[in-house]
Amino acid sequence: MNDQEFAQLAEEHAGFVYNVAYRMMGNQHDAEEVAQDAFISAYRARDRFRGDAQPTTWLYRITVNAALMRLRKDKRRREMTVSEDAQPDVPTTDWTQSPVASAVNAELGKRIQSAISDLPEDLQTAVVLRDVQGLSNEEAAEVLEISVSALKARLHRGRVALREALAGYIAQRDAPE
Image (tube, rainbow, N blue to C red; front, side):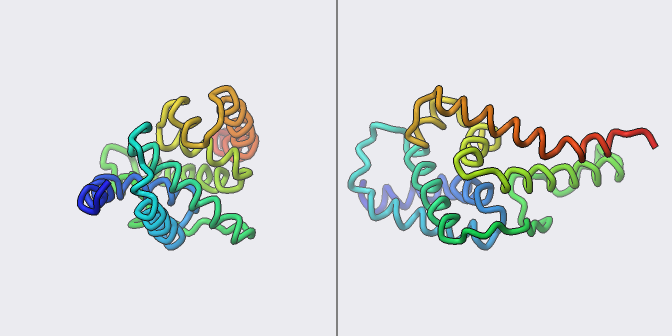
């Protein structure tokens, strides 16, 4: 892949790479750094890309690896700091919802993102790729370089952990007043 082809690939997939990085890291600053690291790694490896996999799968794999390296480097878990303008792929205003419903959904979204960021890395990565990014089981398994059955096991454990982490909040939210 030459420089021009790489530039086009990077431009077409910058949003996806950032979104994966954001979901893995939980904040805008780290996501930007991970996305930048991912593109630097991809650029350095562009000559080794043979086209056996989809370019998106290749970029996801590089981005996930960059995020995991970053998470390992910064062992401490962070609290989410999400501002309205930093949250990707989420509309800031939904005029079809009442203000109360909108506030409840925003709070739920923050709780879910926080619970995802508290998962162990292997479960977090599987949940983000499959349930947040919408990759198929096969694509997510390929990105993680594991079998589909191993991915399904991680997804199950991750989803159970999320359900347990959110159960108290959901019960409290849905309790009659």
